[in-house]
Image (cartoon, rainbow, N blue to C red; front, side, top):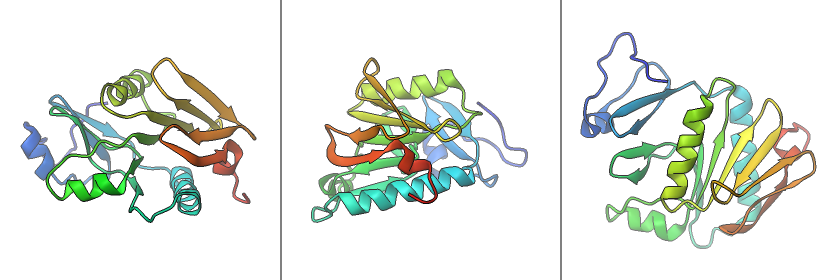
Length: 185
């Protein structure tokens, strides 16, 4: 959805976009000159992100400095900057980013809202796999379902007690779909 905030001028170049500080509380991405606005994060989404990070910290060894980072700017190409809800970066990627390398995560998680445009969600999925992303999770909080993509054509749908896995990127990161949505889990 392309929208112009009421009280500010939208950036015209990518350099302006990088310096831009929106005041409306929405999340924005850059795609070849197109500014894409996303709705504010819902409270249920925040709960799911916290749950994912807690499970990640329990499961993954941090001896090598890996992290699951929320809404990190990711340059997929020279003209596409995306902000996945969560992205996994290895310690090496984080260290190399100090040398101006733009890390591309191999595993990303998007929490899909009812207001998200299905075509835009699919376009973004295609962009992820055109870069070096290997696993994408689409989490649908309203229906309590997780779609796990290992390519645009390979998808596993998880609900209830089905096991969600970040394999082959993080084979140890596995959890029941129901764990994401349950307050008592």
